Structures are given as C-alpha cells and as structure tokens.
Image (cartoon, rainbow, N blue to C red):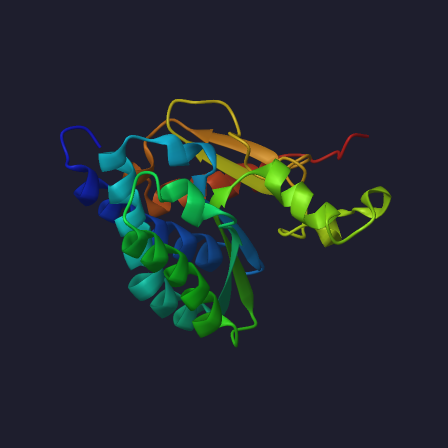
Amino acid sequence: MQGVPYHQGYRTSMGVLLEVVSQFFLQAPTLQTIVIYMMSRRNLSRKRDDLDAVIAAETEFCDRALPLLCVQLDARVIPVGLSNLEDVLATSLTAATVERYISAFHGVRERTAHHKQRTVYLLAGYDPFDELARVASRADMTRISVDSLEVPLMLDLVVRTGNVRRLSDFVPLQAGYAELFFLDKMFPDVTPQDVGAILEEYRSRVRTFGS
C-alpha cells in the first residue's frame, strides 16, 4: 500500500485476508481446505522495519481475528513451517517478539483443533526443501507421497495477487496440477467480487491433469 506505514498496511492486509477466506468458503460451499502463504523462508530477509510490522500483524491475526472466524466457519488451523525461526528471526527481532509470534501460531492451532468441517493451513517461514527434509527424516524417501507431506493434499486452485507471475516456492509439489489465477491488483485491494470472478473462471476451465 503506497504511502501507508508498514504496520497499518499489514493490519489492513490481515483484515482483507479474513474477508477473502470467508468469501471463498461461503461462495464455494463444498470447499474444505484453504492454504495461506503468510511468509516464506526468504521473506525473513526483509529489512527490519518491514519484518517487524508483518510479524506484529500476523501475531495479532492469529491471536484474535482468526480464531473468531474459525468459530463461524467450523475450521481448524494447522501451521506449517516455523522450524528454526527462533534462530533466523533472532538476528533481526527481540526474543520476546519471536516467542509471541511462534506462540500465536501454535495457540491458534490448539484453540481450533476441535473444529472439523474445514481446514486452514498457515504457511509461516515455509520452504519446500524444509518440508521435504522433515518428511524424509521420518520416512523412506522412495515412499514419499502427497499424503506424507505437511500440506497433505493436491491443490485445485492457486491465486496470486500483485504484478508477478510466479509461485515463489508456494507448495510446489502440491500445486503441480493446480489451476493458476493471477490477479492484477495488490492483495489489500481484493474484494468479494474478485473472489466470485476467480471461482467463476475456475469452474469454466477444463482440467486435464496431464492427459
């Protein structure tokens, strides 16, 4: 958001994220799972002011707003990533800030674990190579399948906002046959009407799965 302080911009984005998640579930009643890219491993190299703002906004999002939405949607939250974040973030942020951030993700998982109808995966400090390494540490590499991944499902649709045409390491194995939709607006500008248009186009596409 041009001309808006980092903290205000990220708080606004978290409010839009709540609305977008809600609209996808409401406008696609059979939808059971959404995967949200909160932050990639590479995002952790942002400059300190930017990183501090996004950490604060995401912490508040997990502590307050997201649990309330999960009650309405009967949705559980499963964080993915977070490994070794203490070490990575400690070079830029205070230990207390990092602890609150990680605790917020674990806390929303615990508070929503009893919900069964829907699932929201939150990717925080996510890297696909980290995901594979963690899976490989507890399984024979020759037997890894999507069911053994930390996001254990194949995606149907990936939406990317902004002026870019890339996945940026967003669950590449799970997104192998997903339909890609690139929205030419920044995320804080996304509306319920955009969600409807995305779903309408998705329903009109013929999916061949490589055949």
